[in-house]
Length: 264
Image 1: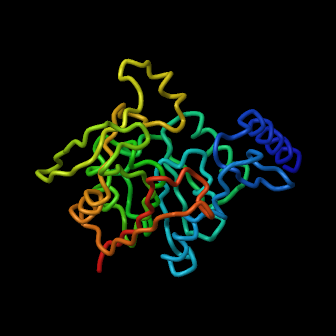
Image 2: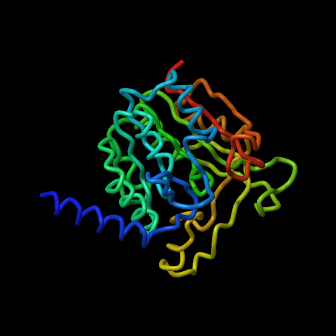
Image 3: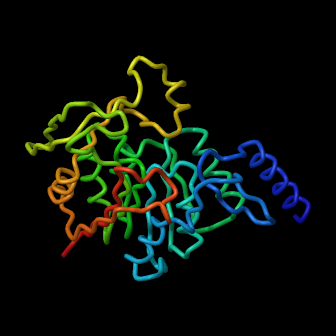
């Protein structure tokens, strides 16, 4: 049994080595080894601090869902911080492989990953205490339906990190003109962000690790429209955080962190 365990560990280490370095998440693997030399360290990030603060300082007994988890940096951090169960959802194959090898290598029993489109996976899930959606909402053509699906599976609160459209000028190469979108009879104002050409083959889109998975044009609502959208799908107690660069390890311009609760 000992030799079998040693063999399996070596096989895991070999497979892990083939998937290194990661693209974004700098995750500690033990024995001085990290997934990359420089990247987002979830344990030190503002977003993790916000989750912990809103959870009363501890994730003990809490289940947390990480949507569009990429390489699982935050999902792993939540598991290490004591969540009852931390589940990440990732659509792209290479990123999911990295998530899975992490799960096997780190042997965290409270860590799980699901391979699939978050839009498809969400309706199939049981409720979670906390839903974490970082860097995914602004890839949606229909952010309303995505937020509505989050509300259905969220028991306590959600943390949403997203870009927003500016009213007076286009940022991040968004459309020059303001546009309106109507969902379930409710109208919202924003801009269109072009992700990639619709004619591109699926295997090429699969390689765009930081782009939308299925929508080649995304709708970025204005801040007021996003706030109204959250209220319309059933969230309350909206807390807005405008991050500075100190603890924010991504481009924080025109970005907002929202904490939204289920009840008053």
